[in-house]
Length: 505
Image 1 (tube, rainbow, N blue to C red):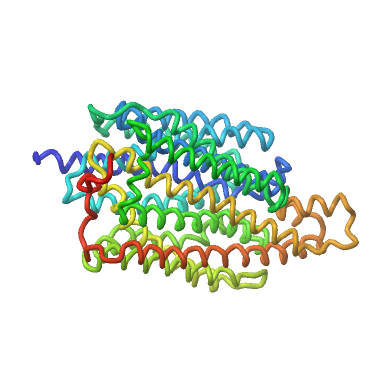
Image 2 (cartoon, helix red, strand yellow):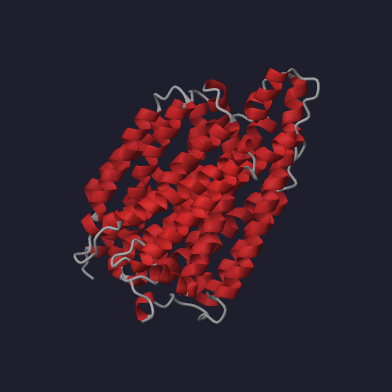
């Protein structure tokens, strides 16, 4: 290693972290504006879920393709293109005048983010030597988790003085600064012998994820057992089977399903998916709880979550790598998942009269647990792939995050909405008022004292149900991960998939 390389690494890491923070913060930052969007754009609770999930859904659906494009055409070039698309989409979203247009523009942001995020992690793995990579990946995991909270804090600050459009102008500024940093210090890296892009596989992925998430989000309105909902789930399963069949037969698969034969890879992917299922569902719900039920302003609501970020950053960057080296990935990831499960169980007891102490008691283990579980899982995914596949490996890691997040918002949001509507007692309320109250808790809060009180109680009941399901999902995942990683080495990196002759990558 030359004398200049450490200085190059010190410059590259902050640049790619800024790009990462720009796109990750946008997943959650608009959550602080949900009550404002409900009032200003007359958005229903289902439309609010789409406004948040359109970004995460497109983001997740195109991540594998984005990672492959970066490997083939150059990660720095793809970073630049992604930041330009993200910034332009954010500027257009600031002028949206109805929910449908805002959903569409959030989808455009997702296209840019799908190019940016895998390029950040694959740039790290391509730039840093093995002995420095673990700490760099730990920093990446910490920023990926904490950026959502800091994005909420910044957007909450903006919303104290300006309207929801300011959140998108914040995205424009962040994208511009990240673009300047990328052009200044990030080196170009690409793999000369990468295979052709699997466009067919990418299109099937889009159809599968889009159909599944659409069916989940619309289920409270259409009915969980309606023909439309069940038909959507069936179509998503058929498309998933078609994707696996296509990838197994393709000479240049977007994602080789045989990778999941590697226990470390499949366990890490499952762990990250369920962590972010719980995390983004939590953010989507709890920020509405703090503003609608507790009456907090956007800034106070966002600041209330800061203890989670304070626990997450040191846990992901320092504590998790050290514990994983000493105790092994299996114990650290399992312990992290159980901590997050305990936090979700604690959150299920929140109601309209709960003090902040109860929320705080959940935030600390939530942040610490995610930090413990994220870093070893992220390292396990990137370790099993050869250098030429690092972009795809990074994209699988990112796909697990964003798919988990999209499903968390869709599933937990839909559970919340179903329970909210079931618990809402509006007997004697005019039909038009009752219909508006059922469509959105944020709207119900402004329909008179009686309706507002009923909406707050119903929302808290729905929150308890949603977080109980999240706690169960995390506990089950912890058990599965412990079983899947049983017998793995006590510490050190995972065995490369390339060494397993039964796997073609």
